[in-house]
Length: 369
Image: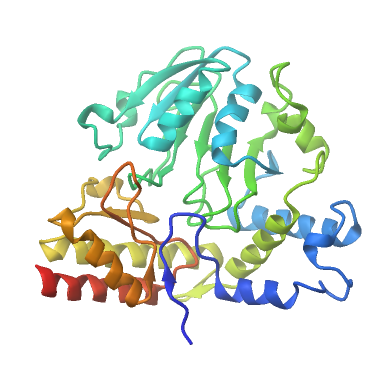
């Protein structure tokens, strides 16, 4: 029996192969007599799981030796505080607001530093375009520049990260990449810190990934809790406190799945990116060609991962969602702050799922358009 296609924005669908392997290993991991949730985080069994996960992630994203990989907790919202606690030294930090999540980051930073609004796309109240880097007002003394590289709610994505040096800034770039991490490569020559919750493309909620350039360690404010101090976490190989062990295990299985993924003659992350491009083109093409469904994000800023769209009459949404559920298409309701509909096309969503959604879109329009 084919499982329904889950378009949730997060916690999101996981690859079926990963779920089946986790089910097979639930009671006994590799003959250890224990399930992963029962293991000591300092025991050799779990240590091998954690080390393999970190190694595979470093390989998949080509993380250079200059950057440390940390497994933390608290999600991206937690990092909204943890980043300024670690990097700002109480001074100025530049923030680019491009949607709901970067706006939350900007507001939270005011508790720990002096955030400067370097750019915003709020003028129209819709967050439909990205503020061009050439227009940013960057501070001379910023401790860092922060942006959200994919806005989950409004559906905007930075397809090319800004080159801060070319913009005249010497500050390190910090990105919240929660909802598109591992969907594409990262240009580490431009990124000093990348963080994200795992519950979109990587695994269950509870694990937060932080990839931080090593020269930025050791700058935490005195008030920073030890468990959130990047240097302390790095010195203890993410084992200063008990990490989210099962979430790390599932993430490790997902990393292995990505390494073996194949699409159109490519493998690994290149194959994942190619399929994500194909999925996004198919769905956006169907929405644009319909002349009925409405998308509001400028074409150059459209997210591959999160596709918000609207019906010409909001009163049809209940019927749309009910019919979608009957067709095995789940979690298509838009975020409460935006309304409308939203399809999230994370790595675990196969091309067949998007094809099924497009067929339903066309059928619903024929019946109600």
